[in-house]
Length: 44
Image (cartoon, rainbow, N blue to C red; front, top):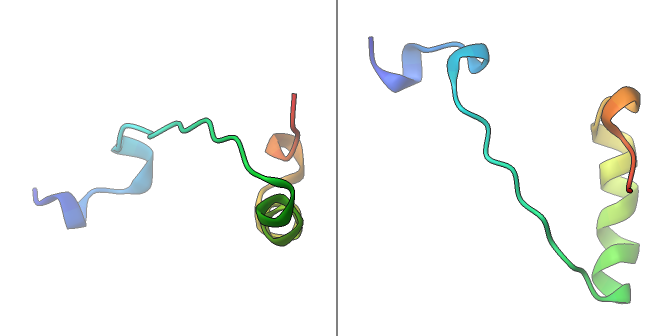
């Protein structure tokens, strides 16, 4: 099976931690709120 044929459930996740400046945060935070599932959409 090629990697393109695997379902997303079988792939290992890549977890990143980023520190954003205030300008990047203002741009990217609305996208996070729009596209991430509500149960996973939180910042600790």
